[in-house]
Image 1 (tube, rainbow, N blue to C red):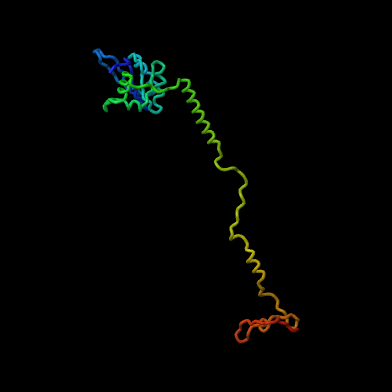
Image 2: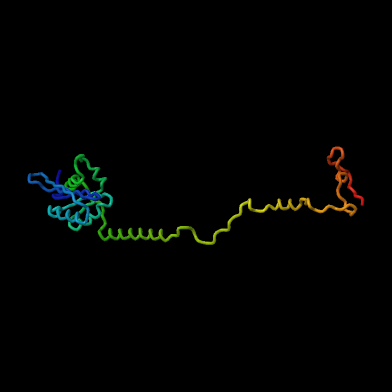
Amino acid sequence: MDVVVARCAGLDVHRDTAVATVRWPGKRKNSRGQETRTYPTTQRGPAELSDWLLLEQVELVGMEATGIYWKPVFSVLEERFTCWLLNAQHMHNVPGRKTDVADSVWIARLLEHGLVRPSFVPPREMRDLRDLTRSRTAVTQESELGSAPASGPTGPPPAPRSSPSSRPSTTAAACANTRPSATSPQPRPGSGINTPSRHSQGVSKITGKPQRRSGPTTSTQ
């Protein structure tokens, strides 16, 4: 297969390390040489990686878009080299990869034969503006959540509702008022006040049950 890029580098970027493989023309005809190194992703790591790629006269650098770990490495290398951000799905769809081949080596081989295309990466100014906007949105949301009241709107507490058992029963009070009192004074004999008797109430002397009367009852004084 024809070689499109003579000197290229493939990067496999992780959270803590970045594995880089550089491929260049070999001494023999149609041969290729390569070397793989691992650098930390700290502040000095990407700078040392950039110096090594510059020493190897690398023309093109390709890396897989893995989460957000590619951003600091890409930001350092784009100042000196042409950097491509590769789509992982496109890389896996290319046939011919062996299981024992490292990701960085496979990326470098795809670059040198021109089998992949870069994904769109906004310019540095636009990326900085995006990061600033996202940070401002996050801070605004956190401040709104912190200033929101923990409870509902303040105001006078509602009046307690009395339970049915604590309410006075008007029916019971009315019935109590209509009951005759055992201590009420009794009328004296000869006072002219008639008291109901068993005969006036229509109670039978034999059975003790009330009898019905057809006419009104009159009392004698």
